[in-house]
Length: 252
Image (cartoon, rainbow, N blue to C red):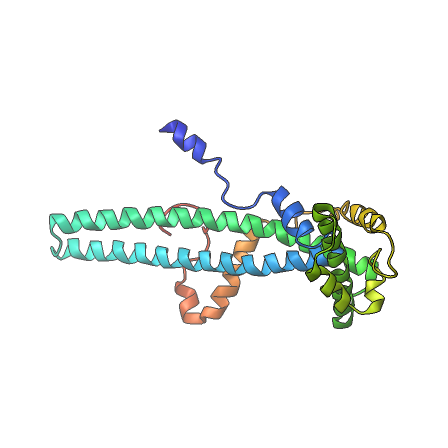
């Protein structure tokens, strides 16, 4: 059993840094700064919601465990509990504590994953603004158009590599772009040779993310989300909400 416990400590149920940086943010962002920024921001937004749900589940389980413990003490004090009632309550408490331990573990994993996406988003936003200026709604629109031309160019090159021709769907999307954007894709501005497109795509896919630095730890992210949620609960409810110790074991 010690061997089993040791092995289970190495289980990774969330994305690794390699997956996050190279496959989700870089590849999902079409190998360009703005596309990678958009992808990182989507991942941050979604995972904030996941962390919040895990936190609420921790709150619920802590309250359930405290309520069961209080009820058990009342029954003992008033001789309301049979031997079988005590056994059932013990099983319920054991299940609650196991569930609480598991949810706390999931909470930490998700917060650590969120911290990595957040670091990507911060580094990419800084780079985009250094290169192109402050991200206004107008600049967002311009960068979005450029990103789609970039993405479609890569899709066209991928089609050429796989089948030797560009698919009709990609051609139709490229045709729908403004001429000024089509001219950014080699081979589509005036019938240039396919090798120019392949060379351009090969260079584009050498893209690497800017240097990443840790911005928030998992604990800081959990505290931030918890503080936000407690503020929404209102004065009365917030005072009774379990606080702190989100990553530790125990019933509360």
